[in-house]
Image 1 (cartoon, rainbow, N blue to C red):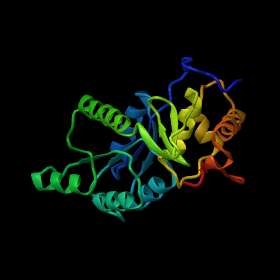
Image 2 (cartoon, rainbow, N blue to C red):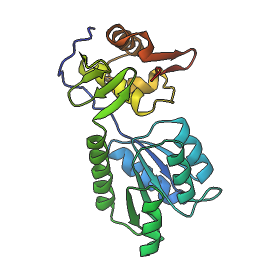
Image 3 (tube, helix red, strand yellow):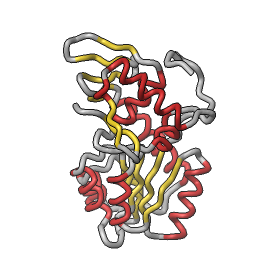
Image 4 (cartoon, rainbow, N blue to C red):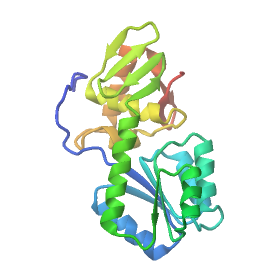
Length: 232
């Protein structure tokens, strides 16, 4: 394996991860199955406290949140996640559908609001749109010593110099940079960045490549756990 992987096609594209917070067991099981059939990786929480724990301890590309949740109400859950720096797009999926309800949901930090009963095709289309908008909005990310331009795969340093990255190097650094306080296990990074044929050792190899290009502090090793972004 080399670090110069250019534009090689991926055997399996990175799967978007979804946190579904829904207390109705039958509905949550149906939605989780539907989303998995569409290619998403899905975690399910059936109360707001569990949703808060998962939302703060793992990185998700999308959140789907009900409002009338036990323990921590849906909009309060959303406010707490936003206050802790969780930026993943959120779709509120609820039976509370007045104009005031929608306004409250959007003001709490949701990007979209869909009222039950809903059309499955519309739900899936809205989730795809959220993923596209979020990806477009985060082309430039803060990285140690500068910024990462994910579209051009360049790190622009504070001294105005640039460092070109391969696709995998850029994708790996982007995952870490989007959740700068989160520690990712090798398995999590393997699933989110690498091809199906790669092994956990590939993660260590590309961390080495990033450190060689950008300095040892760009990625921090958390012993026994995995990796996180280095000092900003």
